[in-house]
Length: 233
Image (cartoon, rainbow, N blue to C red; front, side):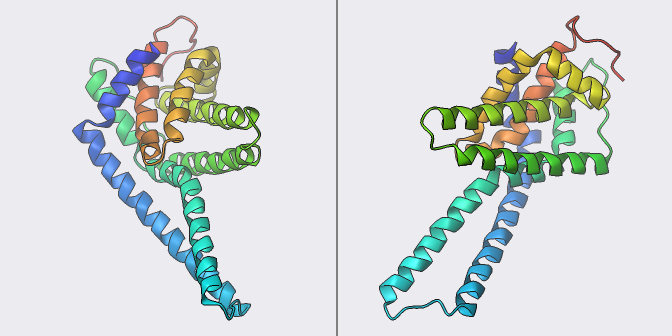
């Protein structure tokens, strides 16, 4: 079930309709990261100017600028997944609708969450991503345990958020959460796939669209199993 869902999600991610959404979300993500970079560089320059940070040795000045630049790259790399999730929140309902319409044409269509609710959900998701990864980053360099904690935290968070987002198009959020818990092994397995994708630079920008496509397929397949109670709304 998971393999079939992942293969279908990968195909959908690079299909023309979702590819158009991908380019729009990537453009907005790069634009936001550029604004963050400009803001941070201005703050560094203002800090150096206000504290008269300079030496008589140009090589040390250049080294300071270089280290600051490396620090900015690290910050932006850390922010990239959360920013891409936040931006993709504008398009995830559209992406889910495309997947439902093309791969499940005979099923009743889902209903998108109200725009305000969807945006609050996306902001919460992005904030949790930052917090979880910050906490995991603290112990990331502890041998074995750090990497395992980092991966496990992202797998759980991604499986929970993307599955409930896909399921909420058909059922109330509390029921979507109950369904996720009922099929926790399968949904967490999907989260592991997303966590693995998320740690790959550049490819992690595909996580939001691949994630929603994956969970739409998984929700559809699990929705036909008897453990789920309550009608689709």
